[in-house]
Image (cartoon, rainbow, N blue to C red):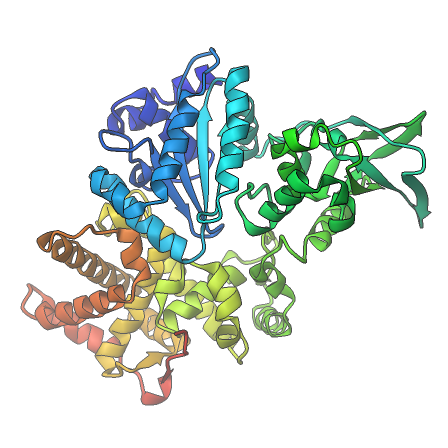
Length: 582
């Protein structure tokens, strides 16, 4: 893996943008494992003088996780505990953000602002120590101690993850969608502590498995045991896993009675002389529990009377296995945005859309895809994207579009429990696609690079700017335009591309004015926090108004303004009140 990464980071992008192999390695990890683009990656790097042992900060708004990354790019040899101590040092400093910010470099100061805002929204922190080597035996013992120290802290929800050589290979293979190896394993089962049964055509075994056995199951650390699980480990920092860890340390013999159990599927089960052999083992419910048991290995290693209930199902049907994974996780690991796919209002919306656009498809489930051969790609819409578009356009709050959790939990009723026509759904989809196609590394609108680094959510500010422009031309500042009528007007007058470009310039202007204002007042400016703050809405509105006031003075501006005015004229009936999202 070291040679693979060494060759990759010799490419022009890495050499040109990062001064040493250490930074290039962290950038490689962000691009290949966290799947960030080149601009997003560059904005995450904080390495350098004053980095306070923090090489990069990546805030994933969808998983609500703050990744604080420390990288060690070594060839072959095992590394000692020094990098772990650096991570522990950064964790201790994160506990006092104001003090950390005083001594941090400029890039890290911005990230600290973003971390503080994310923590206010109950984001979790994941410290990732990434290395191309392995830990020495003594360092592994230190890792367990540090993980315990961090996870037991009640003031800051955090966990420490080691991404060593073996784990790095697994994560890279997973990112490339390669098939991960199947796991075959032999469990020790005690007489009187397991039961075999036949449910219809399916063989099942219910067994009390020793916690000591659990820490030896392969594939926990690398995640290969959980191929069909809807989520991977959340670490030991969240509330539920902290509770599991507390029971394991203080009262492991009660674990069997306090825990709901673990569900696993496999292609075959054979029991002989106290040994249960399973093939192609997948744990579909219990990822968090097994990872927590594994992280508390020292506490359970000597627990002689501590068990957890396992349900083993002999199933080779992939679709059936996926269904079991989703169903068994629905109470805790699948979030509200996933469960909303079965909401009656959503299903009604889906049915109406697909009846109106018979060659189209309305995606309601996470991970679901539409066959682009069977369906018209212009008539494929996604529930998650629609929620972000609705709150940006109708609620005029693109500041919330970054958070699926808020959209599909706190604001779900306001956004979806109402009649909404298929034509409006289609119009919002087309408007957003027209906007988003300009948010790429070619940067056709010449946007500030900091905006491009936030394209997955600031692009909704751009969509918002389009609605503001339509309102300004119709003097309907307190209302919201019907997106279907607005889109048709833009198409009929051939103004869609023009308006997309114009509003992109306004967004850029509003952002850069905010940056200049912060600099003039000696304030740390965080682009991400700006995008989440209502002040950004004021900045965009002001920029649109300022542009329209000055446009007539530009060469050809008068003619352009008249064309826009004629093309965007709408009636009062084409506007409606803003939907509440405050």
